[in-house]
Image 1 (cartoon, rainbow, N blue to C red):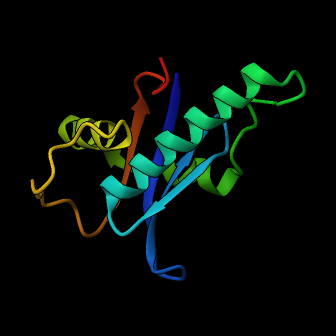
Image 2: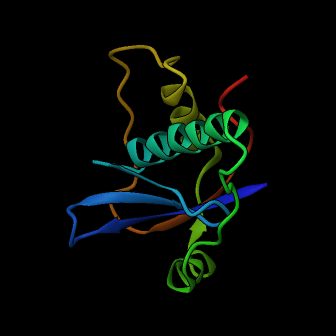
Amino acid sequence: METCVIYESRKDNCWIAHSLRTDQIGTGNDVVEALADLLLGVDQLLELAEEEDNIEIFRAAPAAIQNKARTAQSLPKEIYEIAHRKARGDWPLGIEVTVPKRGRFVTNLIEPIHA
């Protein structure tokens, strides 16, 4: 199972979702956007690995990122579900949600996006 840490990068003026086992990143204006972007990136990595033999899926994230995950609080399941639905294009237009503005969060990527 893949895990990611989601944190605010003031330097980059965005949120970053960083996977710990595949060392992929997603970015966005909030937690949901960053996580949805990461989910799409991991999905693309898995699809590419199915097509080409020389694609390495697992590469651990740097120690500094692993350390961020150790001190992060768990992301609410509902926020993960919203990001997952947005990544799949299955989120109703016009529905707004309030997401955390500060903090550091960790969550498991429950399932690959591609079928």
